Image (cartoon, rainbow, N blue to C red; front, top):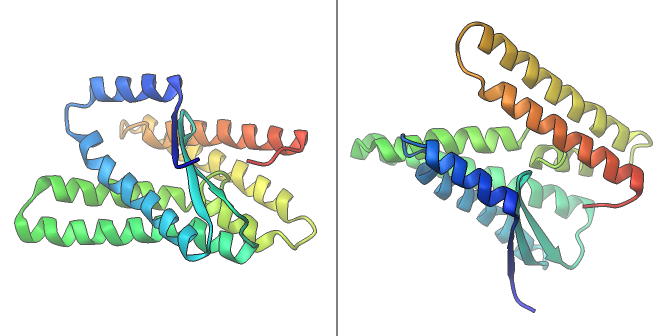
Amino acid sequence: MGFQIRISTGFILLAALLFFFDDCGLIAACMPAIAVHELGHVLAMRSFGVSPIRLTADTSGLSLDYAGSLDSTSEFFVALSGPALGLMFALACSKLGRALNSEYLLLCSGLGTVINLFNLLPSVPLDGGRALRCLLYRIRCGEAAVTVLGYATAAALISFGLCLIARGLGFAPFIAGVWLLILQRKNTCKQTEGSVK
């Protein structure tokens, strides 16, 4: 069947909106960081004998589907491989950016660091939440603990964001927290219905 790419209308609208308001080149600096992050997942999938079959881009972000099955240990490493390679890429961009005095590479480094550290937060469907779920899957209340941690992470980001807004320091953590809360709610509803992403 081959590899498929699915892009939702919502993702296209969001990307167009971000592109319209981006006068600093943030999108151009984000793209390599995101590509390397996803490449980390793909390389790990291949090393565990599964093949990526679909990349889905929607308003909740990017997700890779694969053919085959992974045990919890393999899934743990696949989840963390994206942020791991992404952070190595950010470090390389930082060193190269300083050596070449390149603002673009330094911006790639900064955004790559933020994207990959954010992905390590313990909230499903982020990579950190998926890795935590793999660690706790054998524990009796493991799934409930992951859900509670996901909501707590979203609440902490929202609270931190409100503090920053009150001090006039920006609203990005607030938006990230609300987005994470919405994703966590969607994930909880899917679990209740018995479906797994």
